[in-house]
Image 1 (cartoon, rainbow, N blue to C red):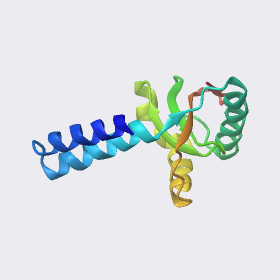
Image 2 (image 1 turned 30 degrees about the horizontal axis):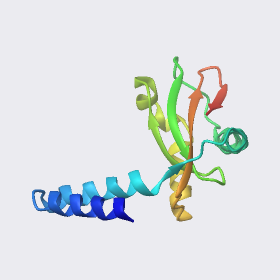
Image 3 (image 1 turned 180 degrees about the vertical axis):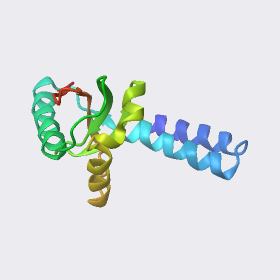
Length: 135
């Protein structure tokens, strides 16, 4: 409880120096950093990697037009739903719409997933149509 009190006190003193927009951004970041735990158990990661792979693979229908691997950092909830993703390389930023990730994220938001615990994976879409999901 003490660390939360310190964090609230630090946030409150910091808030007096921020505009309303920046305060909202900081509070959102504070919530994301302190209320989300990462799954580190290897057996659970392997199980979730398979679930994430299946979700992505089942919805990846487009024939790739990209010529380089698309690499993403993907956070998934305990049931394998995509909670967040971030492009790691420039081709991933350029060709995100050719992946199912935006739609999978939207479907996760539609079911109101608020993952308190997430697993993080590196997801690679290869131009040959091969999908890789690794913890």
